[in-house]
Image 1 (cartoon, rainbow, N blue to C red):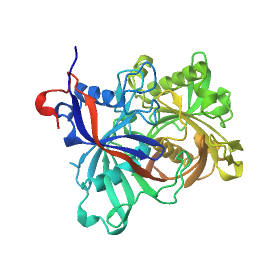
Image 2: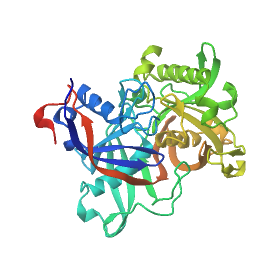
Image 3: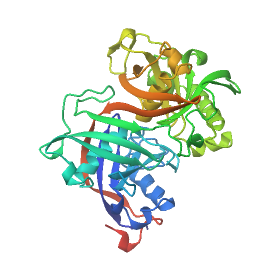
Image 4: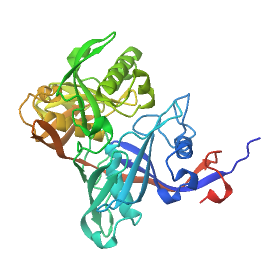
Length: 405
């Protein structure tokens, strides 16, 4: 009979933007899981409750959606000019897999508050009242994020009147700056914002046909196609996509073919090992629609429609990193995103998603014919949901007696 004891690991359960996940300090993890590898993956899978053939995460901290099957590891930064290193793991729901290939823009909003609360930011830089800028090194992709966190009475301010579509209750606003989101140096698509060298390409996909696509690496690698080209209007909600097995298979095929063209994987079969990136999204011009909460969204209030899939399902709102890709592509004339937004130049855009509207800005420049993004800016909110000791059964990969915190 298996009678292994449970580990007790200090952890914080946080909402960041329209996602939530389990946050750890690196030094609080069992020693075997403090390094990248099978022990860490095994621990986080068990924390979340994956793989779960029932798709419910009953025996774990996950919520059985791509927005809630997430873990974050924070440590004091080893990079000059930064406060903390932020590592993000997207945990698969029904397979034993943790994807480390990209960032979560939504949970990025919770990193600054966590760092301040855990004493990882120099107290001299934390005002009694005002904004504290937390300098974050995003370790998955080697990028800098600046989080401007409101502080009241020397502590992180969590409550407020900032409303974010996709989140039920208002909270305090946190502004995020994603610095050089397409800067050379990461391993996504060789460091080029347009890995194929073109603003648009034609993808010839068996069983689907030839689709025009913009494949961009800004925020997160993303494949954008026109909604009309695949039989959609761009106003769809989750039920229209996620209950249609044929549609989900189509989107995965588009994603896989785009990943190969972007140089992210070598063969189509490799897509199963890289589920978090690239994202696939479809765009359309503005149109009236009713959001998932029943809110009427008027075409006049948005610049375009965007629907994006994450981990094989249509997202209930919009991934933060994908929003960076949307804003960057919208700023560049000739992309399918820019054309859906009516062309021209867009320093910021408002786009419709299943839960409502999101505004995001991006600064893109062209130098010697090559496009780069200097920064993208968006507002999010974050809140601690629970903190204390997380219990997880010891496993053979991460359980020796002296590792229990």
